[in-house]
Image 1 (tube, rainbow, N blue to C red):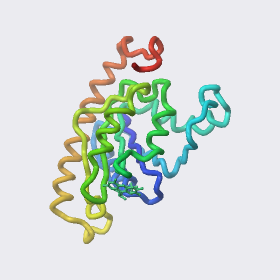
Image 2 (image 1 turned 120 degrees about the vertical axis):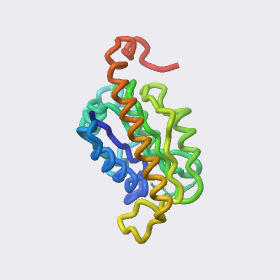
Image 3 (image 1 turned 90 degrees about the vertical axis):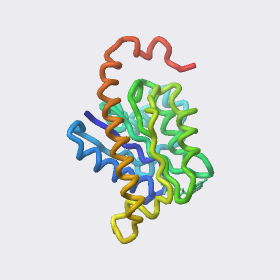
Length: 204
Ligand SMILES: Cc1cc2nc3c(=O)[nH]c(=O)nc-3n(C[C@H](O)[C@H](O)[C@H](O)COP(=O)(O)O)c2cc1C
C-alpha cells in the first residue's frame, strides 16, 4: 500500500514539513505500507491554477505529471496543514484545484493540522467543508491537531516537551493505523463501478 503525505505549507523549512517527515517515518515502519513519500508544497511551488490546465497545455502537463503519478498510485493520503490567519494556506487550496481527474477520488485521507500556539481547529473545519467536492478525496472521521508544534517532534530531544510528545505520538500512531484500515477497505470500494467519476465529473 502506498500512502502519500502532503505538506501544505509553502514556507521553506516549515513545521508542516517537520511533522510530515515524522509521519512518513511512522508510515514506513508499518508493515502494510510499502511506499510513502512527502509532497512538500514549498518544494514543488505550483503556480496559481490557470485555464490552460483544462486545455492540456504542455507546460502544465510537464509540471504536474510526476506529482500526478504519485497521487494516482497512492491508496491514501495524509494532508498536513498549518493554520494561517485561521485558514489553510493558499498553496494547499491551489493544490486541490489541480486534481479533478480522479487521482484523489475515493481514497481516504487523514487531516493533520499544525499551530505554533493553541490554534489548529480552523484548517480541519475548512478542509472538511471545502476541499473535496470535485477531487472526491474522503477524509476519515479522525483527525490530529498538533498544537505548540515548536516544542515537540524536534530532532534535538532537549527542545521537546516529553509528555506532550508521548501523548501525541500515541495519537498519531492510532490515526495512522486507522487510515491504513480505511485504505484497505477503500481499495474494494474503488473496484465498484459506482465510483466512476466520468458520469458526474463535478460534485454538487
Ligand atoms: C501567515 C501566518 C499566519 C498565521 N496565523 C496563525 C493563526 O491564525 N493561528 C495559529 O494558531 N497560528 C498561526 N500562525 C502560526 C503558525 O501556526 C506557525 O507559524 C506554524 O509553524 C506554521 O506552520 P508552518 O511552519 O508549517 O508554515 C501563523 C503563521 C503564519 C506564517
